[in-house]
Image 1 (tube, rainbow, N blue to C red):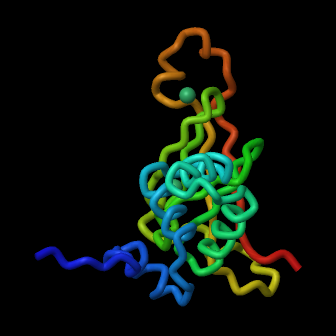
Image 2 (image 1 turned 180 degrees about the horizontal axis):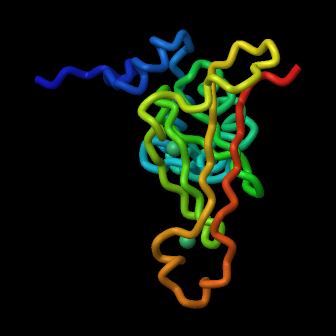
Length: 167
Ligand SMILES: [Zn+2]
Ligand SMILES: [Zn+2]
């Protein structure tokens, strides 16, 4: 005898995390988290294409809405490298940073620089209660750096973004 549970989704850690975050578990939300589990640092279009394979009726607008909701409750992190659309990932809550190749766009996670959130104590907080500091390291990835054609690329543009609600 096989138990049949046609309308209840199987217990899924993703669904549980959505519920624990205070959101209703919906198929698009689960599909978006599933897509991001396989592909870190992707834009909404890429998520949309992945979600459409399992949920063909999903619209791009719906995916934007889901990404916004999941980002809002901290299940997804949004990352905005200069010159690229917003990227999304599921690695949240550890204040990790990103290495971005200025030549090919490869993105790597890098753990917190000094073992604790860096730059959370700026010289002058201007009255802000700071909760996040984002650091993006720009340079050439190992492969691009090994290519002699790239030897003239500037290597040292490091942007330092402090994310905070702007008044
Ligand atoms: Zn590269
Ligand atoms: Zn990341």
